[in-house]
Amino acid sequence: MFQKLDYKLLKGIILLALMLFAATSCIRTPVATKNYNPANDTFYQALESLQGARVIGQPLYPETKSTLFAGQLVSLEVINCTKSEMRIPIYIGEKVYRTLILERTPAGFFLKHENKQEDGQANRINLYGGHTKGNGTAYMQFFPADTYTKNLMNLSTPCVWTLAFSSDHSTFSYLVENNGKLELQIDFNLNNYLAATAGKWEQRSKR
Image (tube, rainbow, N blue to C red; front, side, top):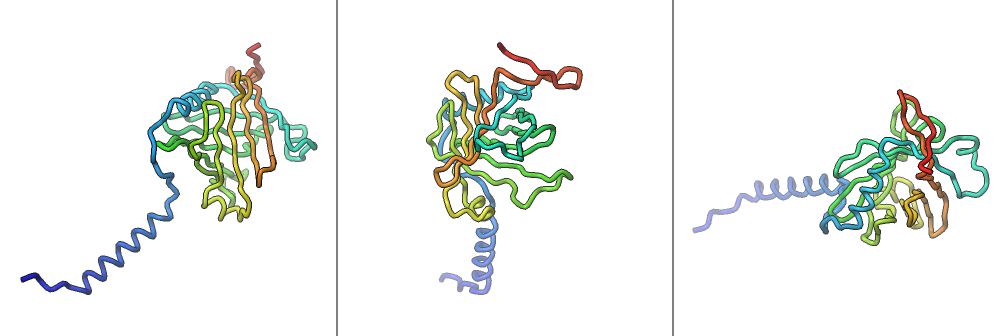
């Protein structure tokens, strides 16, 4: 004879399972569906090669002189690289504008924007970004806004971030598009950089 089920115990188990599911479903983790591919390896390694220098950038869009960038040196550097993650601070003058956090996943790349106040506290709009959709190349990767970002920024139209190298790897670009329209483009000249010497940044050129 089968033992009679304890329905109170069963109800408690089901309730606990639902609570665990609800908690884990809120964790923002990209779904791993593929193995690393050679194009992603090449893209990641090209960024890794920029370590040790601060690359000088030029905002190309918007074309009007933005008060955000006016009269300021724009630059980036690649730091804290591991096999699965790197950080890319973008500077306006000596202040960090945003820090891009690029994570490798079996499905591609996950991009987040760390946005902090001058006192180091996180801004309300923080860690926004998205995951690649499998259409990236060794030169270019696209990051559509994920659900977390859409809710955080109250986006009603598609938003996409792009990280791209020129075909000769002389330029690295950071682009932002909203609803198919370019909102921001900064091109970084990889032949024009600042190298750290005795704790100071000195301008150098590969030419």
